[in-house]
Image (cartoon, helix red, strand yellow):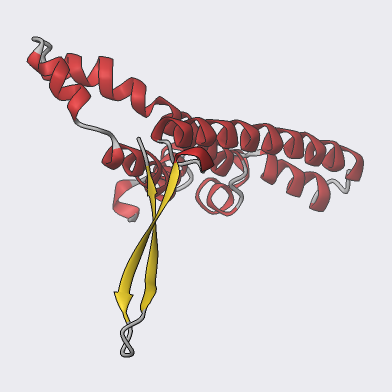
Length: 176
């Protein structure tokens, strides 16, 4: 890919991080989008909204928890990128990971490296907390959480070879 003249540039790092994290966004947001009820957007269209306005006012707010969750995870992956930054950018670009490595291996400044490590742990914990909360909001919005009051069991009955009734299986159903 040398003909692109991107070696050692910030653009190369960004393109690589987009390449690696694109699937995270597609799986997180696309998974929720596939399970959205299309009737809300259809109702907005039937009431006269354009397709763009229906998307902006109905679909996009419903996708907001998934977008926030994906953004927090992608931020975490990009902020802690080590190999991509060193291979494509060298020492002129850095993340907290590369700075910890430089402080430890080149300057032998273990105190600075340990402070940066603690800062990184705090940032990772906060981002994971945000991702967890947005994921929980998304699951509540989709009613994916377990609500025992709305669960019902349907038993499938059958006759055995001797003519007695027996349970063939149990199906769990959710009432909406």
